[in-house]
Image (spheres, rainbow, N blue to C red):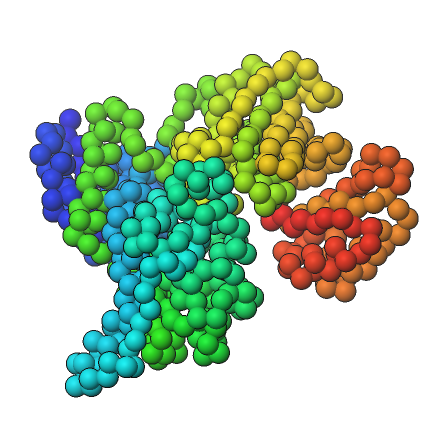
Length: 528
């Protein structure tokens, strides 16, 4: 049987050579298809390969009656409706490692060009200006490079910068002091990186929590004369705030490869002589384009041959009977993981998952993967999925423990997730209630009953009269409406907890104001 593959975006020819050389494969290369044209021809293909230009929407997937696998020759899958593919049993694979070296090298090239003002000097020389004094730069030797995000690319940048005899100070939510010591770099908090670095480079995904991570507040904390590099994702830096920081001399220069809106042509940042920029070239090398095409081609060949793919983005179809039994718990599991990770800013070291009651009869590993995915997604975004969640946790030194107990603990089914950091142990338990669906029924040692979705404020406080009134008045002042409230205490007048469901995201300024109330010890805003 011939396996038909549609290549809808331009790919490196050497990269798809493995597919060309395979038997029983028919390749059609048809690029620049309109949405309607793609929907018309997709029923004829078992595999589809794209880069970033072609959008594989739910409508396309619904028309793809024979499609088995989608390959993205690159890292991000924003142009693919992964949920729709998963629902239809279509595997999505990508190429997360193919451009690592290219992106790391481009970061180093931008750092060196920035420090020595090479683009500015070249531009002056092309305009017949010979002005050596104007383009005096700085050496990078013995300077501190702050790296925000120590994944694949951040790690490669750290190794290269160490070769330039720079001092490396890194922050990553999953970096531990022990791992940093093994790498020969300094472990630091985000605050440390902002305050101590001579150069700062970011290598993190763009998420709600990382959008405008480098904002006006962050620039105020930096050393005067710091230089900024962003070859990761546009939107991590507040571009207007960066402009002002350069104008007021807090930032001496910036090297930017990515922007909040692309093409980036008319922003006033480009008018500043302290800024150098490239048009999103981090992965634009012959080798990177070849590598991502090879990685996707080989994964598609593995799939055709019945082997495990190496870079899956979604969960392939499971046995129908097993999936029927555990699928109802998926949403609860992911929400428990999401909720728990919001309770700490420290590095997670251990996660223990306990299944109680009737759940001991089921294959629970898919549920555990959902829990870990929920925990990691806060910092890793769409890079983490059900298949790679346990692998990514292991790479970050997080130990996962799983156990079952027949003890029902008052519920016919109960999942308890416990998280350990250096200084604390936190836990959350959840269940499925007939007619109500997923519920959080305990947080640490406190009993609650909360629907795990929407906006939740967790408040630790002293059990005293008037606390709820003060808290309610303060939230009302900021137009935060309380939908539901859960309160529990250990002892009269002792420690207590409030879980508030509210109608909108609560800003950090409001949370800081809540903590100023004498009876309130700690506050967390959770968005599920």
